[in-house]
Image (cartoon, rainbow, N blue to C red; front, side, top):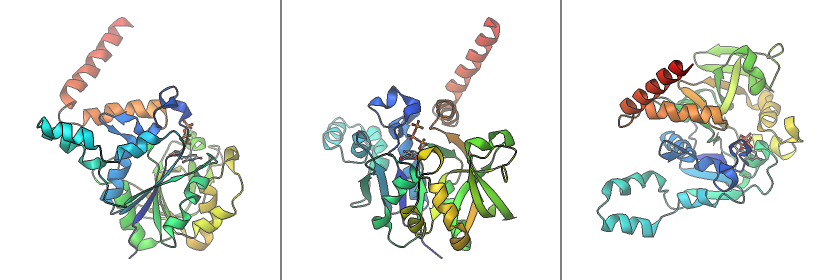
Length: 295
Ligand code: UTP
C-alpha cells in the first residue's frame, strides 16, 4: 500500500477572473465565509495524511506565505487580552517545522509547468496535486477518499464528476474503459471536447494522485490547449504505461475560480454553518420574496 506523503498546490495563476480583487490579494486568499480558499485545500490534504506541502507560487503572492507564518505580535496581543477563541482560530494556519516549501514558477506557462517545478522535491514517489480553486463540500475529504482507492489500484488517478453533456467543453473529460464502484478505469482523457465528440460525461476536477513517472512526460511536454503546458497532456501521454483512473468522489464541488462558483460556495458554506445558517437562510428567503414582489 503506497503512502501519499507529499502534495503540490499550484498557486501561481494570475486569477484574472477576480480582478480587481486579485490585483493585490492572491486568489487563494479570498475568503469563503471566514477561511481563505487555501485553508480548505490544506485541511483536505491533512485529512488525507499529507505531511509535506509544496506551494508553486509566483511574485505578488506574499500574503499566502505570511498566512502560514507565525504572527508573533498578533498572538501576543490576543493572549494578553485573553481572546482565547480568536487564538484558537489561528491553529489551522500552523504548519509543523519544515512541512511547507514554497517554490516559484517564474512564468505562468500553465498547470503542467507549475507541477513540473516540484520534481526535485517529490523524487520518485506518488504524490497528490490539489487545485485550491476547486472546493469540495462533503463529510469525507475527496483526497482522503482518493488515497484509499489509489492504494488498491495505483497508477495516475484524477477526481471525476458527472456533468451535463452540454458542459463537456469546459473540462478535461475521461475516456472510460470500465467502471468498478467509484473507480473508472480510463484509456485517457480529452481536453475540453465538444459535446458531440466527448468520450464520456466524466469531467476531471482539481484533485490528482500522480505517479512520479509523470515528470518524465512533463519534462518534454510542448504547449497544448491555450498555448500552455497542460498537466492533462502529460498524464495522458503516460496513461498507457502507468495506468489512469477517475475517482467518482462523494461530495459537492464548487468552481471557486469563477465568480458564480465562488458566490454559490459562499452561500452553501454559510448555510451549513451552525452559527450562521438560520439567519442567513432567512435573509436569502426574504431577498427572494422581495425580488418576486418587485418583478
Ligand atoms: P486557472 O486556469 O484557474 O488560471 O488555473 P488562473 O490564472 O489561476 O485564473 P484565471 O483563469 O486567470 O482567472 C488553475 C490552477 O492552476 C494554477 C492556478 O494557480 C490554479 O490553482 N496555475 C495555472 C499555476 O500555478 N500556474 C500556471 O501557469 C497556471
